[in-house]
Amino acid sequence: MSTPNLTLLTDLYEMTMMQGYFKSGIQETVVFDAFYRTNPSGGGYAICAGLDQIINYIKNLHFPEEDISYLRSLHIFDEDFLSYLKGFSFSGDIYAIPEGSIIFPREPLIKVIAPIMEAQLIETAILNILNHQSLIATKAARVCYAAKGDAVMEFGLRRAQGPDSGVYGARAAIIGGCKGTSNVLAGRLFDVPVLGTHAHSWIMSFPDEYTAFQTYARLYPSACTLLVDTYDTLKSGIPNAIRVFSEMKEAKIPLINYGIRMDSGDLAYLSKKARRMLDEAGFSDAVISASNDLDEYLIQNLKFQGAMITSWGVGTNLITSKDNPAFGGVYKLSAIKSADGSFLPKIKLSENTEKVTNPGNKTLYRIYDNDTGKIRADYICLDKETFNSEEDLLLFDPNEPWKKTRLAGGSYHMRKMLIPVFKNGRCVYHSPSVMEIQAVCSREKDTLWDETKRFVNPAKIYVDLSDKLYEMKKQLLNQMASV
Image 1: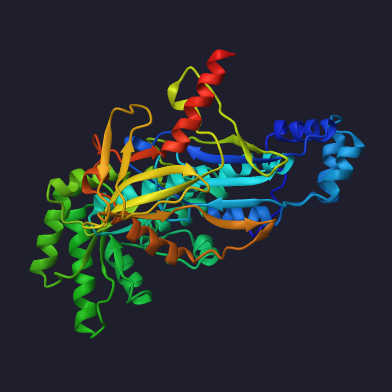
Image 2: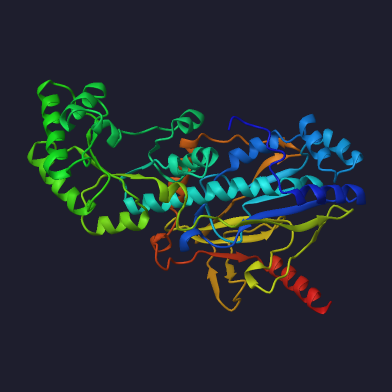
């Protein structure tokens, strides 16, 4: 997790294809696109995350002697190819959508332009990193949307699928909008807030609940959130918490960042009872925090029931994206560079319409409505195409081209989404801090229509093709059909 060499974090067939290209003398520069096909959890959008780790992976891409020795031991790689690997480094270009950005299906999130052996090798790691962090960032954004401005804490480390998932999942959760994480290592690595209270075992290790609360308050007077459901929430936990808060008040100890946490029971009912008890005791600013297998659906439901919870701890269902545990990103060849410098488009066909790829060396524009600042559509076009937002723009659904929308000139503006990250093998992009990316993500979420954010049957943001790209795709499809 401290910038390791992940060069062998790849599927074996990437290596065997590399040797095949090497032996066959195939050295062409190619274009690969990384994209995904379906939004997680049936949602209307996703959040892009993981670019910083991808950058570190590319920077450290090399084959040390121990890697060469291991590959030699497999008895499938020849010495001339292994000798080539000893001097290997990435020499190509990479373009990417910045972390924290809103993204949609089928649009290029990362574009790699590199010699084919280099572009092939990095496929697996790019997808591994991009898929995981984008998935968790998206889940976090959904949870935070359900919380409607309340603080959300990520605390799923013990349920994550291993240390890397726990650490980088926490990073992604912060990007998606979480206030902090319980993961101390993530806090150190990414300089993000770490938050937490105590467990039931703390209460149980003392002679009684009151003594446990009193001791904790003495140790952490400016961060005193007491877990009140170890024995009986209403009859014991909350009264003992109020007793401790009253003692702190009498001792002139400032009540800062204080409150209670509940981890079981009917959270709607208990939180309303707790709010009344705390208010009547003079602690109307005490936070009521809740956990217990929460996700966006349960939080939304508790909100609907009038729960008086103001802080949410979300663990298993967030760090694993339990209802949708895979992002489904793919990495496809879209063009090969010709001797004259032009790009020969390539297309992958399938019986499944959604698996037919978009050919060519492409870029992506986002189209915003000038009046609202909201996203109208995303627009995939060929890399050299330019547009004038003072002119009318006709958009159409590439899968159902009779569905058309005309945007009047001057009513919209466009932003290029893919930015250069590597040029000729050299990194030309500086990653923002995680908290800066979170701020970017917050602004990005504000560009979504409310109808797109809803969990059930969200309104679709269309990803359209330019006329030139659409005609190129049709021509290739017709050529393939005639073969």
